[in-house]
Image (cartoon, rainbow, N blue to C red; front, side, top):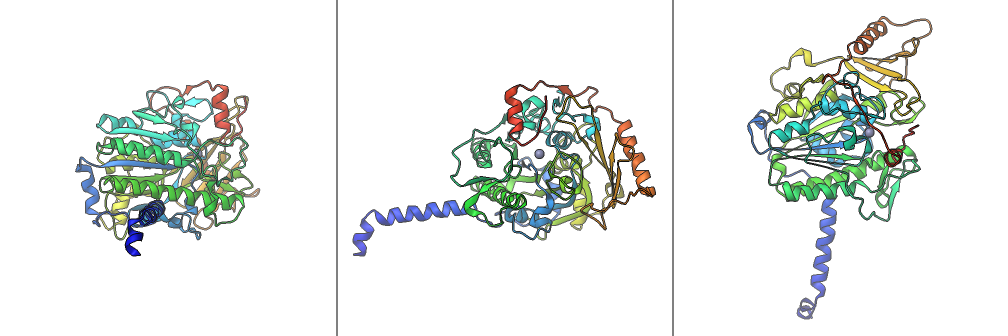
Length: 472
Ligand SMILES: [Zn+2]
């Protein structure tokens, strides 16, 4: 009987089915990436190695405080948590804006918004700007950027240095994809398309040294697979669900790197351009102001080996420091004209190494948003944030009364404005001076103004699909 059964095709069908289930499950399994445990001394040796690749994961619209690693009570981020707990986590990171284009221009070029000047919907980075991909390319890396947000499209100057810079073709969607974002024009495809394209790139170029940038969008769109939904139905719940979905896709990417034998020679960095508001200051979404919920972002570095314990950096840093740090880590040339610095010494210190210079701590951090970035008929209206130690100032440049001061130590959510009708605290006055100086000192790092680009109807429609109101 057994013999006959074994001779029949059924055991093979069943075996194949089990393997298929295991293969699917392993994509979404959370486990320690198979890398050796090493001490912090190995961090310094990365500079000398000639085999280290960099995968830069930009998760659009990712609030740090919605990740388990940053203290969130819901299990939204098992894979990200694991990467952080065995690597380096910067616990307090401030983005330079709450709108993708301004924020990404600062992140990539490590220059302040007032300096790069990419503040309006038609502004583009000039060719004179230097982006990290150009440095990787000059150092002999294969470079690829795969993105799903139209604000980082090539016409805005973000493709500089990438051999391949592409929006992945939308594939067949799962039947149970849910889009929680109220946008009336859904962005086509999902981040599964991004993972598929990344897999193709790794299979073809993984045997050479590479720099791969992946710009995830499903958290921005509150998109997730409804069959795994467990967090409720509000916008905020859907956003959490989308973070979990993104985290699981990231797990599939790590699995791919593992299967190609690349984990022991790849740095994986995770960052975001801004957060997302859920009525903390009376608004939903982002790109409207600069409060903590839209500028508190993660920065996590997973090394080609595991740290046990991982390193947690408490000092507040900014997105300007992300690329100076990563280029320093792998021993490449720094970005010219950077306003940020490598904060790697802070990580080494936190891991028990030599003390970092005091100047790396409590640096003054500026942020900027043009409130009318999407409306060419309205003049520029800058909102400036200044963060210094515990203190955070919001300045509405066109409104002399538009000052707000928050004590981040007592009030991390920035809900109690210390500027009242009766009193402007001295701290607000001193930070206001810094804000005015920041605007007065504005100077292009490249000696040229931002490029102005024309957006045709199709491009505008693609950008509106992200849920932004853009006027003509
Ligand atoms: Zn964004």
